[in-house]
Length: 122
Ligand code: FES
Image (tube, rainbow, N blue to C red):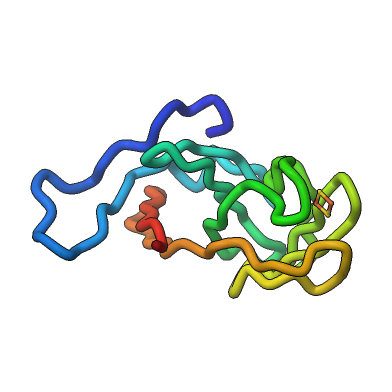
């Protein structure tokens, strides 16, 4: 999934005011626990499988500096930034430890069998 180029829009025409949903890949393309990066609408998104097997999608760029969160270590339902160690809650995007103080955006994930769909937050 990390080498996947842009996600594929899952819907033909989008009713006005409704966000676009992207097919980003399948569950088996993710590490058993960990993340991969996809580009959706010009935005880098980390698609992450947590320790309980749940799939999350968050903005990939750490809010402390410009590094990829998908490369971080996943423990439970958190991901740790590899550069300075801030942990982010995969459910709400908020940092649980310094130095990051701002949350990352959390996107909506829908599973259809093995397929992973993501709808971007604003
Ligand atoms: S770059 Fe992520 S915590 Fe510093």
